[in-house]
Image (cartoon, rainbow, N blue to C red):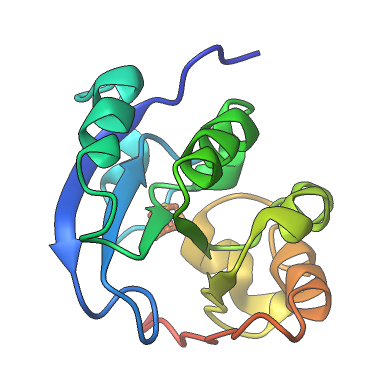
Length: 160
Ligand code: SF4
């Protein structure tokens, strides 16, 4: 089990990653899929220390509304829930960008989220050709069924 969130990138300020809110974006390191147009999954080292990022976010209270966890794939890390709770404790809203490969984890995290964006790439039967992982197509569509209102869900078709 991951003790600390592995972070591959950080955007300290954005107005476009959480609807109607100023946010910071935490790009979680790694992804179990291997989409051929993406190199996020190949990162192995965390580039940021999560505790230091949390301290930085503490200084942004009153300036930011939300923190978005993106990737890579945030739900691939068992440390995500603790990281989300740390952000909530600072008074921020929490957003999640996910490819939806772990629907049960998403269902578990759902009560903690204020907004989520789900990347639906293609129809289920066509996923494996993109992700290069067998039988990867069912999970994102199960996640789509879980991520209902009050969360805003964005379905993002991805070019092959
Ligand atoms: S699911 Fe997203 S992060 Fe993972 S390999 Fe595909 S495009 Fe990259």
